[in-house]
Amino acid sequence: MVVDREPGRRLRYARIATEKTAGTVEVVLREAEGGSEVTVTYQLTALNETAAAELAGFEAHYPEFIRSWEEAIAAAI
Image (cartoon, rainbow, N blue to C red; front, side, top):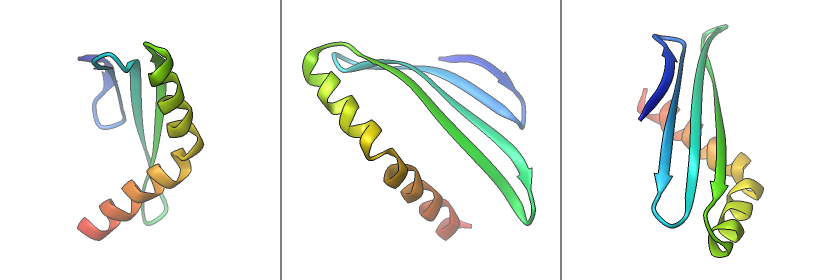
């Protein structure tokens, strides 16, 4: 569900992973030299202890996760 947005600049949406996490994801797009810069921010809450451990792992490996998105997007364009 879209929480709020600025067309062409920013989007924030709510997400729920059943029995795992709930929260929001914000994607902000900025003009940059030679292209665009994107910032993605997750604000998630674990809904149980197992999910808390998974969320901690997601946080620990977030730089690699977001870099994989960057590489996939660059390869597609």
